[in-house]
Amino acid sequence: MSLEVVYQAHPANVARAVRLLEEKGLHPVVLDHPSAIVVYASMGTYRVRIAVPQEEAEAARGVLADMELAALPRVEALGRQFTRQLALSVLGAAATAAGLWLACGRWDEVPWWPPVAVGAGCLILLGNAGRNRPRRGPGAM
Image 1: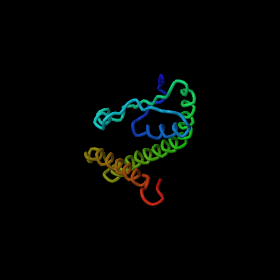
Image 2: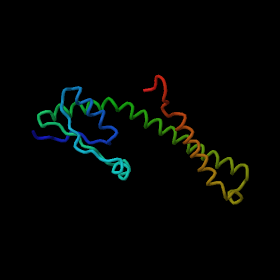
Image 3: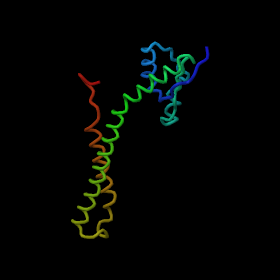
Image 4: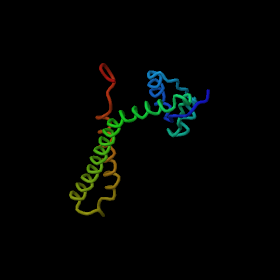
């Protein structure tokens, strides 16, 4: 039996793909089993390969393509959410800088305005990220 690699993903995402392939009656094999040290040392770029018998390769690719298409709306929503958060943070930093300029009249008299403006932008970004993070608890997915 010869195997053909049909999917490569981050180790955290492999279990879902394997489960989906098994539900469709295919026989996936995870080729790589990295230790936690390898995954952390690669800074999230390590990919685990999933293979199936050659006879099942086309069917497996179709199932995985459907899985990726189903995930596309969630990925696009996350991208829009990140863009909104980043724009709000940049606008907050600009508003902080403008407020300091209006309050003090000149940039020369405010040598500490860049760190304050950047800090305000970072705090806004962190606040939005905390407010928009998924909640754990009863009814959470």
